[in-house]
Image (cartoon, rainbow, N blue to C red):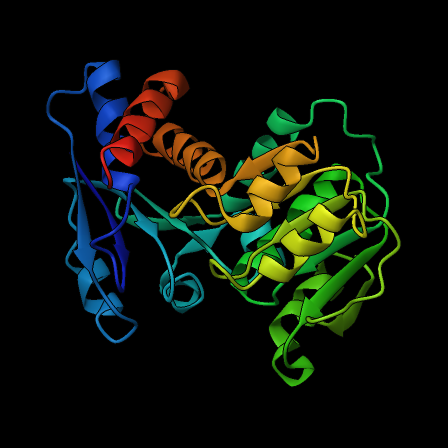
Length: 275
């Protein structure tokens, strides 16, 4: 059986390492997983060419929204978030899933197992597709106060639409200096380096979140993650998110429990080797 991760750019993806490690641990000798460069224009033809020897696809940016019109059906979470990162093929049908959300929840609770049922005020940095998944994760974690720091509120339409579908009130704030009193949880969906001034605020003691998730996994640690760790703040990174969303994909595509620790070991080894 075949599977692949699609996106543009895609050469940097760690997903093949994780999925191949899972197949090896599960004894699935006939399974393969590759990275395929694919943009929005090329997605319809690529999916149409996936025959019965295909188990599924992992999707990265910019394809998570583009794929929605190409699905036969999708789990409710896909509609809530407005994005699918997984296509599972079954009996000729294309089923859409979002494993980013449960992966994010697991990454956070793994880093902060004592996180309260309502983590208190939450601050999200960035308003793109990953921030929409973060909103759904926050709903699952019981959050009730969410501020999203964005550079341009005029581009936050998709985020606000997702918040409405999730019935989660969201307040937009300036990216440079959002007024959030002591966030219980800080989630950065911004590119590497964009959240460095928040790292400086943590270092100075002006900001003391209860937990930090930075979705970047390379380079790691980011300045934000390093500052949080130095301050004794439970910290999760993009690798944990990638690992747990990939584990959920493995289970969807193979029907078998994911060997998370084998996947974790392979991924960490690849990162240590400079992948």
